[in-house]
Length: 81
Image (cartoon, rainbow, N blue to C red; front, side, top):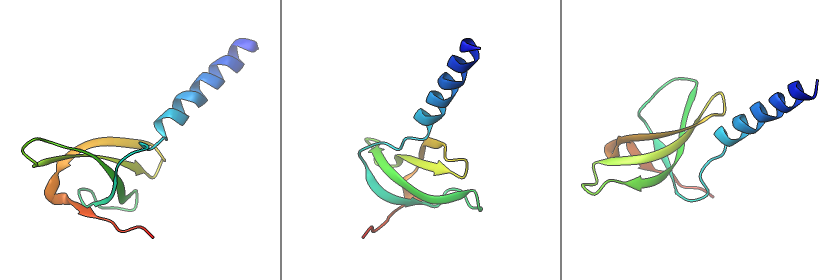
């Protein structure tokens, strides 16, 4: 029984790690994907040397953070209040 409890806690920890957004980045809107499962709100975390590819972190509907390289033309400034 203790083994099952440990396995459950490990799965919960892994799920929690996948749900954490980076602590640094610029708030942006990413228009790469459309649909109800993608809000587009994300954080810009890195830009390539040629400034054509941007690395963004976005959260999907399942609350999993996805770290993606996208075309910088698809990344727009998002104003927060």
